[in-house]
Length: 69
Length: 154
Image (cartoon, rainbow over all chains, first blue to last red):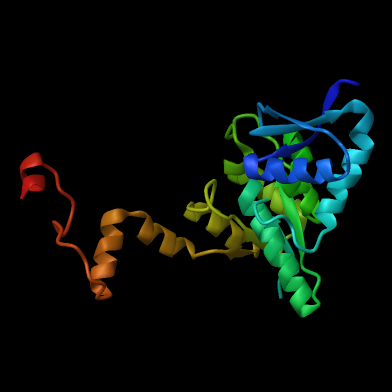
């Protein structure tokens, strides 16, 4: 497994879990870490970063954003 | 007609605005765009991804440590965003009448109460007096500021 790298920042746990859920649906594992300048960092394996970015881009294109985001 | 809304906030308030604007656009077949104001560190935040565009803000020398509170920084960002309206959500400058006045000065619609209303309602005693004048039922109170413990006990 490659080192974990940051793919997104989340304001709170609800937003972070929405992101994690979308990543999980795409088969990408993720971890949360407390951030310094922002509450939470979402981390994914380095070799999954591009796929994870695609998942997040797809999330942002949804007409209905996650309710708790 | 509003076409470009700058968000002077982040996180949930920002996402709520994006969702509302998308719904508005869908229902009216319009194309109102949302511009996030974000620090460099926030570039990976979801509210920035959700927004149509983003403008980077940063603390300036001698200014507020938090750029979301610095009117000079916000002035530049709103101009750079070519916004015709501003949404502040809650927190940060949402209750600062000076910011609403800045928007007026820039010819940008402040989506919120006028500065004068903020000033009147920002003072608890003043707002109670206003409520009384408007005939709003009130719990019994001193009718003004209390300066001593004895007065407060009455």
